[in-house]
Image (cartoon, rainbow, N blue to C red; front, side):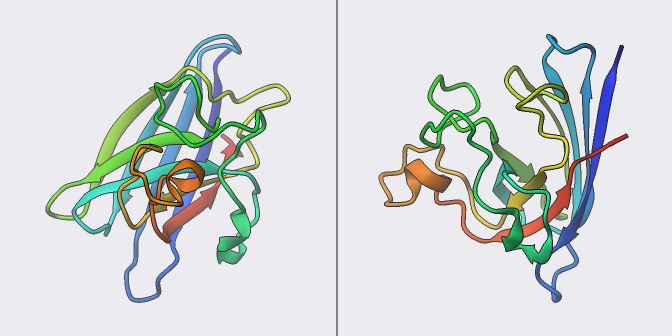
Length: 156
């Protein structure tokens, strides 16, 4: 039974109309989750990309809370053993400001007690240092800066 979820991203900054879709697909509850990312109107370069704890955008992306971290770990790269469940690394926008990529993650799930459905996916303004930058925010947020756009992850 294939599980699917989708988030529609909307920009936080009224001057920049960052938008897009993020589609999550999981073939079964034990399979990795495939995340298809399509974002428009983002500054060229790398941007932190994370699942945040709350499915609340009532006060913009700020309402989404911190990175989703049910196991109380420090921030890290998607391949690190010690990482927030919501740590998905970076996505890269091309010169024209678009992102079109696919991420496969073995920790994100669309079912069970740690499901990401109902939470918020956020793309940040800056690059995520993956917890290795030495900045005071590296082990908490990857020092990825403000929130460029976000969307609540809902069942498809």
